[in-house]
Length: 497
Length: 58
Image 1: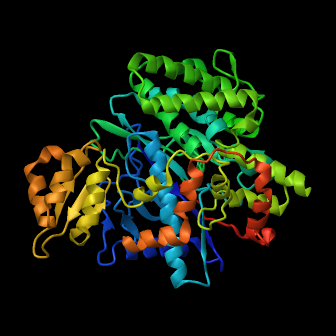
Image 2 (image 1 turned 135 degrees about the horizontal axis):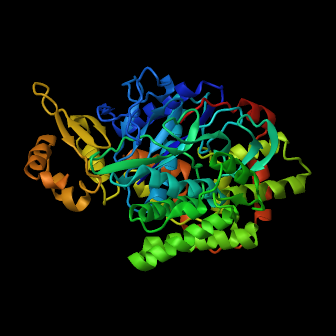
């Protein structure tokens, strides 16, 4: 699994966001790879392939959907296995592939630190035009930008089962993983606070698009793995989380449900609510969970009811499959969240973003006699997710132990430069950090070595995300003094990558 | 990489401070940070809110 974040970006002199995004990625590139220029390998990307099994013609596609053109944009493969680049008009950190929800959060937090470092480096060159970066998903003027989750799935699982099993989850999980937003409507046409940043931008149930008519279930099908065996489920409905708890629970609950779908453990028809696209927005505005929604048999469910249904099924599934530390943590968080939401949601202000933000807004308004529409309160909404300055409000809360942290800062610090050991991200990260001068390009499933200018490039395909781990390739990399050694050794052991 | 680590630990997060608070139990309430929030909020909130304009993404 993996997590991508497109960050909001602005500067003191209101420079355009594309220029700013380019600046910070270049600033980071110069410091990580002062002597080389590793470009992203687009050969294997196919954003117009659809999980339902058909390709969209390029002529039919909106230009903003075309991400595989080799544009002149900075596009880095980092020593921790991540991709750091400019996507449209945003700096994007795509974290390395990991196996557990806690590691999703660890490298997501490392991504925040990388943004901070990049901005600090940029400020040395442009002291008059300091950049600010925000880990949110809306500007409240009509634009939204994404936080995308990725889950590797078995190709053999029927896509209609994925849609049926995940739709009720994706429309209701916002009650614990929503990031909170002031403003209703894509351009904040109406006043009010809502649970999710993304809800008002969801306009379809199932679809390929990610920049317009955004769907609950995205059908983009670039597996970044053997397409005969795997698909990658690309999830675009989620908000960017500042809270570790929300991040872990968002990914952990979704991964568990995906396992249940793959194993055919349960029939999800029971919680199949009518009109899911409308329900996403209604739940987002129902801060006390008073509304009920009908399934196609006329039975009513609140958002909490649906999540409790999933939780019970997940516990039954784990009772059968066996728990490990990670699934125990996810179930524990899920129970904390739902019992808190049922009894007194204020108790969750130290774990759930939209409640932390709302509680703070209410207390600040009461103290200063301000309305929700006051610009100071609106600025607090953006400022909650600012990560570049030291005074982003979620950071202030974390410093004061008012927003719980589940990873030690030293672990996050090491994830800035170290890849996960248990996926192919290890081989990618270690290769680019040790042999950066001999690598021409890299992607999720390839590394292209340029060892001798008189010879052709050598491409290593890393199609299996579970290979290229430290146990499989650690010795080969540490014993290779040159990129040529590495390529020679890896050719001898095709089973390790 | 050493240089980057240096920047990150000296100028950004003071890790020693964070280390200490990491194990400290939560004794504060949200009310106790309202003054701190006051200090970090925008001096010109109207301009900031109006000026935060992004291009659409994915």
